[in-house]
Image (tube, rainbow over all chains, first blue to last red; front, side, top):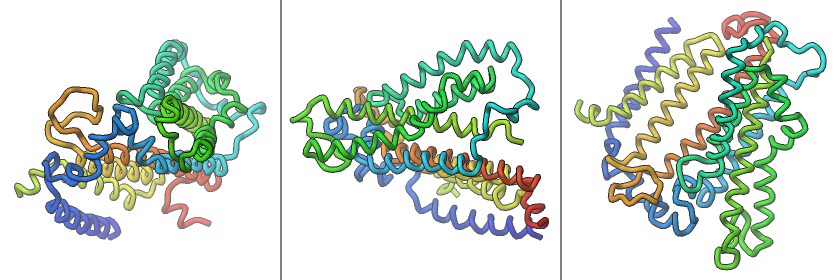
Length: 236
Length: 116
């Protein structure tokens, strides 16, 4: 009975969604709204106004910087929630991972040889996002994935040696700290809050500030992804 | 019918969305509900990205000399934000499920509703 009601609801929803989709322009057609609205301004002026050839990055770090701040706040809050629901255990005592099978030698060997390459690739993505595909969130998640695969391959006690707890605690908030500093720098240099100094006054400032924000977001996402994994692993 | 065939990408996104919604509503296992939520999120991302594509377009990296139109940078940015939020929601939901299992010994919604 419940299954029937569910299917009926889904069928109703399907009809509604399909009838709405028919009204939209077909994918890829020149009538798509973005072809005549603000996106075109970003594409035409973005490289000049922002100084990045990757327009996605220009939108993320200039036109909609405030959204990016909110995004960084969301992952920070998510980590705070995870740590509140699953309080960190005293790791010196008997941890919960005695019942888990020890990683095999082959796994450990392969992970040990691939993780350095993954870390280099992640760092490259964090730092190169302004000119090509990449960016802080993507690179940060890859760095976090490197920490997770190291934990799975050689055990999290070894993996956590690379990211000691007091360092991780600061890295979790790195994006928040970076955004706070950035919000303070703007008014000091005569620009508004969350605005870059004018390129005429400080030609190098914009580029370095963007790199600063990127590095903060990358470090924060990497540390948060890894910490979420570590706070969950070994619990039944 | 041709109207729908022209929009096959959208239709596939809708089907994926409904599959995810079915898992979210009909499954009793909380992990499966979270998987369903993730399928729904993926469907929405596919829909937004498809809406931002230009036919024979190129990625919004403006260095290349190209006469073809660019894909929409704004929808790609929105999906980037959406993925981060989706990961955050999944992380929080999974930690809650872990806690529920520790407290009640089950992650079946039916049993949780019935017992205690």
